[in-house]
Picture 1 (tube, rainbow, N blue to C red):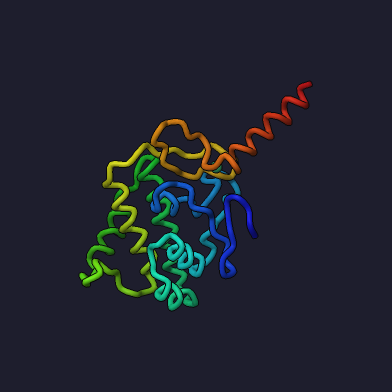
Picture 2: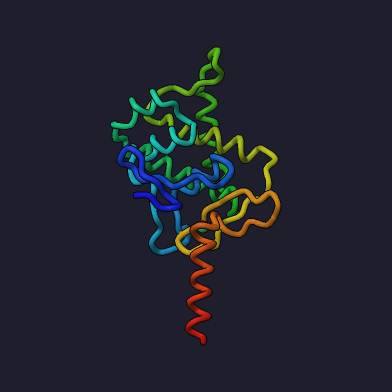
Length: 187
Ligand SMILES: [Zn+2]
């Protein structure tokens, strides 16, 4: 499947990364937050691993070794982290859960000549995301906005205060077409 908001890779359908920061892109692995029928891109552990690899959080060799495992509990943890992170960024804040995962990542990292490396365990993608999330929350970053598009709610950085849609090619265009159709109906 290829659309302007998702692409297919090695049998997984992953969302395009348009947020401007990997932590926000992780939040965007669900679309339609607060709606009845959200679109879940983290449909399995394999999708989580491939997403983390594509986002540059897990290297290709590690991803290849992890991708065929099926630790359901880790997937559930990733989804909880995602919801907590999103609420820490644009909601009323769920700092505790994000902090707990980030602290777990910090505690398990090993210092190597190449830098701090996380252990290759099933939970690697969760720890890597948690570390990126902590970096983002503690950084001075531009304002974050949530796309108002239907079935969207994707987050993105809005440095100039002028970006309304996650992508003009998808949500912006859909809204434009809807307004056009309404105008035609209204005569
Ligand atoms: Zn959108």
